[in-house]
Image (cartoon, rainbow, N blue to C red; front, side, top):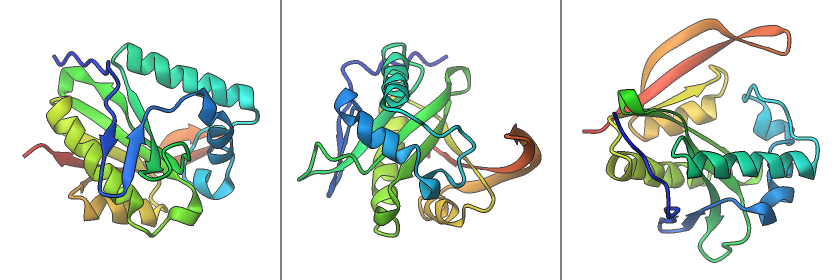
Amino acid sequence: MLEINFLPFPILKTQRLLLRQVNTNDAETILSLRSNDEVMKYIPRPYLKSKEEALELIAMFDDKIENGIGINWGICFLDEPEKLIGIIGHYRLKPEHYRAEVGYMIFPEYNGKGIVSEALQKVIEYGFKGMKLHSIEAILDPENKGSEKVLLKNGFVKEGHFIENEYYEGRFLDSMVYSVLNK
């Protein structure tokens, strides 16, 4: 079974991006991100309603990092390291299966600019080389065509389409699972 240690926190860089640890200074931005209708459209999670809730979420991120059970990065441009434009991370680690779920969200004005793909490539690389994962999965709403396009572009293949497998806010939702293997 994998034993994962995220300390010291791994700062990742790409050609344009800095993937850094989310901190309490990002609380207002996290609140804005997690309460944005367009961002949350396909994410069956409660909206954040206050800065305190954003701080609680950041504390949860930190706890997962400290305990080696999950990691989130804030997505920033290299030349604006304090300005968070999104988040990406490995959620729901399954160390006994050498597998993790990747997830991401970005402010709508940055969609279609290759930012998520660029960040995702670096996070996949870290997952395979740094974490020693065998596979990485992504779970998405079948209506989320933008995310599906990003995953396919980055080598993910569709594993399955689950019918009404999740119950959220009074209705049953479908989900699709995509994955990529460490070759």
